[in-house]
Length: 91
Image (tube, rainbow, N blue to C red):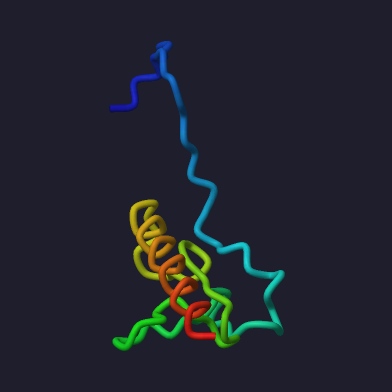
């Protein structure tokens, strides 16, 4: 209810959403992109986080245009680390 009243609230942290646009401009023309997001394989055969460049992986908000949540970013970060490890072991 909007009442016009204010109050002080003691907090240990404050998180401000600053939008949902990925910071991917740096990769334009270097990696496959779609609507500003880095395209990954998202395949059933592993290497789901590999980009259009072999050995380059993307995770989190730069490639997730659907869920855009911290927990899914952490999950794809783990996936990218495992994919990178498997890629390096195969070389």
